[in-house]
Image 1 (cartoon, rainbow, N blue to C red):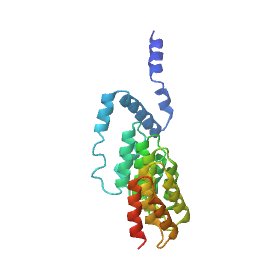
Image 2: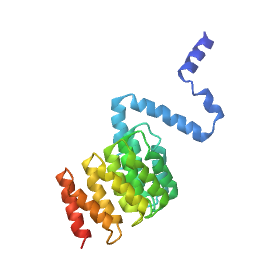
Image 3: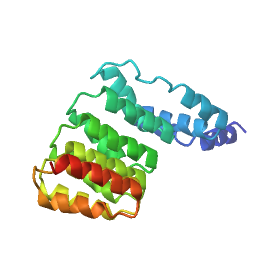
Length: 231
């Protein structure tokens, strides 16, 4: 009967009755989640979804509030590509030192997707101010990331944001010389030279050890770095 039909409809849309008693922002989030489910369950829809993101925030000026708000919404997307697009855009549009946007990026430095984490590290390096203790701490945590490319980007970011001569940061970078991924070791050479105080003999010794690395690229990087640093 009519009651049974209504019950059937309700069972297919279990969230609908709940939306009557929640805030507008919650309704918006629930609606977004339903749309995401529909998109991700159909490959063609996923393709169109990503196609619509082409050029997102491309011409937005620094600090554009509308673009940043849209980016924040996009960070909730189930599709990693959409979240990465949002992160990339925030890195280009947010004003330097924007604590609100940095907080969003810190969260996505722990994203489940490796490409989003990598992009978030790059974006933090782009908009955080140099010597920002919070940014340095958050980036340093990614040195232990399971993904080697995320670790490499974290090394680069530390070289850009760290305080020259800071003992703790320098020690973290020295530990990365033992990483099993060649690009991490190469980037560590660059980063430690960026942060080294002039005439630091510990850095000179580290670079000389790197000249005995099993990888030729690391050896060449260390040789060039030593020539620049030990003048």
